[in-house]
Length: 109
Image 1 (tube, rainbow, N blue to C red):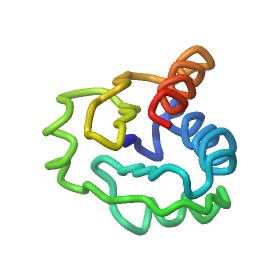
Image 2 (spheres, helix red, strand yellow):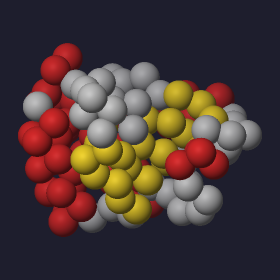
Image 3 (cartoon, rainbow, N blue to C red):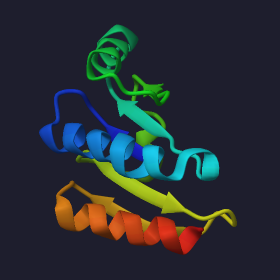
């Protein structure tokens, strides 16, 4: 589960990793749910299309879903196992965070 926004540079980096390092690697083995926080459909769809991403995204235009998980900052990433246990919860994105997320995904599998 990832909360992100098109205007957020770390979010854009995380989405690139999501495509190349997660979806392209694990395919249908895991479910990925990127949710755009506080943006309109046309902005989000335009960005996803321009970037050539193959994954679907959710919209949380009024941030009602986001507020159940956080009160500030994007990106927010959660790795949740098949039992519903949160294995990873993080804020921001960099190479070290990508390694932590990858490790949590491997643990979940």
